[in-house]
Image 1 (cartoon, helix red, strand yellow):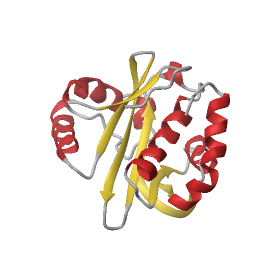
Image 2 (image 1 turned 30 degrees about the vertical axis):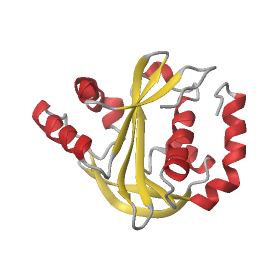
Image 3 (image 1 turned 90 degrees about the horizontal axis):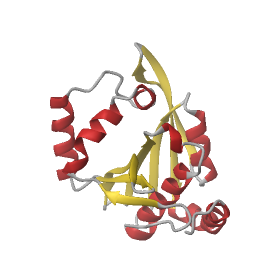
Image 4 (image 1 turned 45 degrees about the horizontal axis):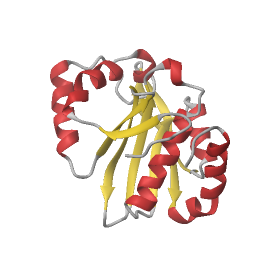
Amino acid sequence: MRRSAAIDVVMRPASLNDSARLLAWRNLPQIRRWMYTDHEISQAEHDAWYAKALADPSRRYWVVELDGAPVGLANLADIDATTRRATWAYYLAEERVRGRGIGAFVEYWMIEQVFTGLGLAKLWCEVLVDNEPVWKMHEKFGFVREALFRRHALKSGELVDVVGLGLLAEDWAAIRDASRERLGARGFPV
C-alpha cells in the first residue's frame, strides 16, 4: 500500500468486501460508456466475474481511496512472467474526484508497480478511440500508440475503434523523473 501525504490517496488491494460497491460502479453509465461491456451487469454475472478475478494469479485489483473514501478501481491483468508484460486499466467512479490529478497519480503508481514492483518489461492497454482524454494521458506517461484496432468493440450496437498503447520499461526509465516532478508539483509526493 502506498500513501500520498499532501493528497490523501491510498491504493489498497481489493477484497470480497468491495464486491457490492464494484458492481454499482461497473453499472454506472459514465463507467460503462468506456468499458467493453455495454449491458447492465447482473448480480450473478458480477459475482462469477469477481470470484474468478480475485482467485486468478494473473490479475491484481486495487481500490483507489481519496481521504478514506473509495473512489475508483485499478487493475493489472494478463500478468505474464514469461513475456514479462501485463495489461492494465482503471476508472474513477466518483465524478467529484475527476480533474484533481488522482488519475495521474493512479497511472504513476500502477506503472511503478509493473516496472519496479514486478520487474516486468512492458505494460499495455486498450482504450476506446473516443476516450481521447485517457489515451492522451497515457501518452503523457510515455505510452506509445502501437495499434489501431478497427471495429474492435461493440458499443451501443456499433463496432468502434480501439487504440492499443504500450510502455516499455526503458521508455519509463527515461521519463520517470519528469513524471515524478509533474506529480510532485500537484501535491503528490512520489
